[in-house]
Image (cartoon, rainbow, N blue to C red):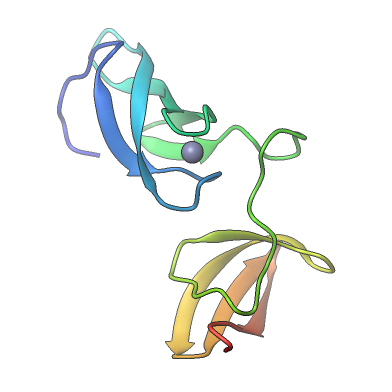
Length: 117
Ligand SMILES: [Zn+2]
């Protein structure tokens, strides 16, 4: 995070853990120093909170919109979240080549395929 000051009502662009892409977020609350403590995605309304300047997802374990299901035909990129039917929620840690990705599920990394025709 840059040392910029924000105010509630500001609009910022950041990664939305639910949408899996960068979205406009509406700043909800800030500290006295102008640091964002929570912001809401303008597209899916998922709230994200910040802890010491690091964004953390609020949606973990909740039934509201979570990561999209893993889809082998989809093309993933680093940092994208997914929900796998066997392994649960994961995050892409590396794109190895055009059709292979490493995904971290809990504390295990698994190699999956993606971008299959
Ligand atoms: Zn969103």
